[in-house]
Image (cartoon, rainbow, N blue to C red):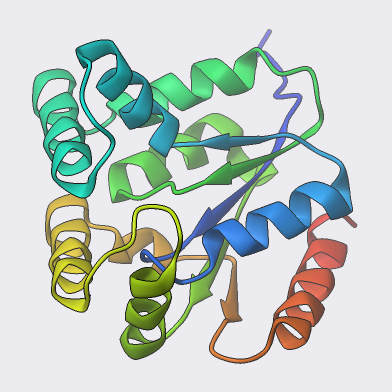
Length: 187
């Protein structure tokens, strides 16, 4: 008999600075559910290697892990975490690659929903420059965009998202969009 999947997974997608963290933090409080962050795989490895947390080291470790263990490495690590969570609804932040998307779709079937958060490059680069944690210059942010789109095929999951949020305006408009989508997903 096939194992029935107990989880409803809501993955938040988007390029750096789009507002994924704002969306996921809002949903975590609203839905009172846990979240898992793909970036923790990178940060855990950086700590294990004794590396300083910065963009250069993050990129190096991300690329090294995928080169050594395959493009599906992050998805497999995060699914292991999810399998150990005893909650029905789980939020996933920063699923990036087309491969990761396909693995999650296969594993969780119709219990896997995606929300893409869109912000223009101009808006995202301004946010990234001014964020208190790990700020990026516009040049570095654009380089990261290109790397994520070209190397990770990040555009695929965003293009195939079940829902899209426009995050170029004020927070109250963002929250209204999130509320509407959350209500629909959890019907």
